[in-house]
Length: 382
Ligand code: GDP
Image 1 (cartoon, rainbow, N blue to C red):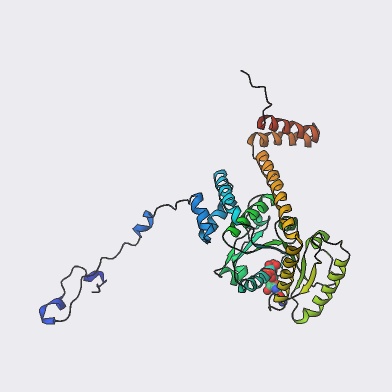
Image 2 (image 1 turned 135 degrees about the vertical axis):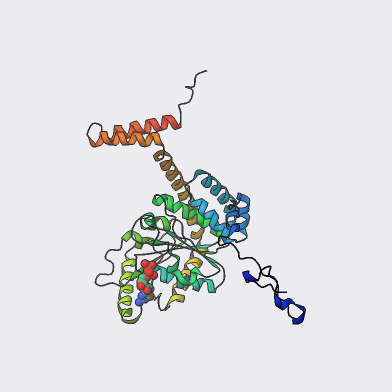
């Protein structure tokens, strides 16, 4: 039976309940609830999942657990880092079975528009897609370049897509290592396509190149010399160059740029993979030529899996990341030491004031660091 919720009816005797009104009953109401929800304050604090819970969740494809593990990977708190490393170690045997694709291009080249479209294209074939990013500048820009999920509108709401903005803190090496570790977690969670996006303006391409199987460079048909301003190094890394915005009045210019890129690529030495980078035109916005871009990527994977380059490159990358991680951890261990920090300030003043040479200053600081980190053997008394 329904209860009347009107406060004034609560606990009152209603005339309608008299026998003369047979067949009609008015129920007592309920008290007006307090304006502050008392249950809110009593909610228990969110418990941190254990390593086992995280690993089990990830292996089941639970995106909440995946996100929480990635947050640990990105955290600067040493305990979080230690936990993250344990989770990664358990996930490692379940990783590696994805296609890792790096996507770069200058701001405005159409990366987010294209990733949205490429992503949906890939997901049509089944499987899951993770979109990660490396943007070392995101701390300054508050992650606006690669952090805004709404940039990939359709992927952002797709149940099979996992989008994670760039880790924001730290050096390029640190940011890149975190993304590399996140790839492992995503693969263990069953993501069989991984896109790693970066802004094509600096060093970050090298970092992305060192963690992906295929590197896609998005270009625009500009005015004048198409190859101007494109770092030769970036072009050399590309396994495919795609010229976006080949639509409307821009089609002819895009085709011209395509011809120019093709002839420029002829001048480059043969690649270690034996693959000849291709140049295609497409329109991310109007979704023209998308399947062709994807067919090229499929051809590449077939080629490198057949000739063994795929595995060779992954082993080289694994070695590269071991040394990168050592370098990065050594640096941060050194620079985060408060004693070293204090000493560096003093020595910097001495060098700037010409009281000491750069080399003796560096040697003194390193000597103190090494003496404290690795005390000489056999000097302990007793
Ligand atoms: P990003 O900075 O590289 O991520 O580039 P965006 O994806 O944000 O695109 C930059 C601008 O170019 C936006 O205004 C897009 O609408 C536009 N754009 C992207 N792809 C195309 C395309 O294929 N054709 C045209 N005409 N415009 C496009």
